[in-house]
Figure (cartoon, rainbow, N blue to C red):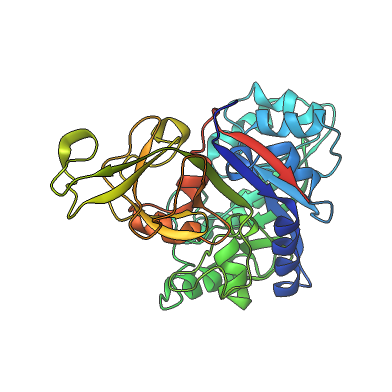
Amino acid sequence: MTRPARARIDLGALQHNFSRVQRAAPDSQVMAIIKANAYGHGLVRIAQALPKATAFGVACIDEAISLREAGFDRRIVLLEGLFGPDDLNLICGYRLDVVVHHDSQLDWLAQTPLITPLDVWLKLDTGMHRLGFEPGRVDEIAARLNAIPQVNAVRYMTHFSCADDLESSDTSEQIELFNTAVAKKDGERSLANSAGLLGWPAARADWVRPGIMLYGSSPLAGRTAEALELQPVMTLTTRLIAVNVRRQGDAIGYGADYRCLEDMPVGVAALGYGDGYPRHASSGTPVLVNGQRAMIAGRVSMDMICIDLRACPDARVGDEVVLWGDGLPIDEVAAAAGTIAYELLCGVGSRVQFEYSA
């Protein structure tokens, strides 16, 4: 029998979440963000399940090539742009769009002859202060791009820093700054990530760029995925490989920093940080055992976790354990572990077997 760690991927839930994007932004084209192996869900399988996405957003050429070689003809956008002039022939050959966010990229474009001109997304830094040109330079940069024969269409984009916080004024300020900068420019515009398109209607421009919401996690602080009508796409499961009765005062796991408060059943499940489950998940982090809530007891090991089974007295070896997903929101697990859903999803390891269903 193979190791029981599984990631069940519900493609029907993915499509439901995509329809939620369309309902929120019916007049926008959708660039589905599937970088980082589609947030850990499987790049090609997720792309295949999104036939209505107008474009895909990825982080690097390798991801884009995987999509092209799998037969996808749709627009693919390199969100971090090119990393050097040698990238340009590949970008051209695979018919990729490129984000331009730095002067060095402008120089590479101007200096590299190409067979076919590229579509470019000019990124403005309206407050994230990570990538992008100062908004006051938009005329200069647009003129430079339009003067380069290797450039075809120019689109405009920015990225929000605090869109998850509906109480913050930062997003409204970023929207205003972007709109002012590009007011006299031709070319399509894109501002909204998942939080932007759900929480900030003014950000729903020509294009929206949903990422985390496609996979069923809430992009908004204080709002659950269920309240936003999102469904979990990944359910991470394993099974109990041991159930033992431990005595009051017994220490569980490395460091002996969890001690049983009473005589109690403790289960051992076959999944640990070697599979991407966060080592820093502390005692009390929720799991489901046969659909009943239970809690981690002691430190997460490389291959195993221990579970307080007092709430599941009938649990037996072989019973299913859900780490997150259907019935246990990943956002709740992430909060208990002091992290975010993005990190949990992207961190699922190669030892976990993936199973896809419609």
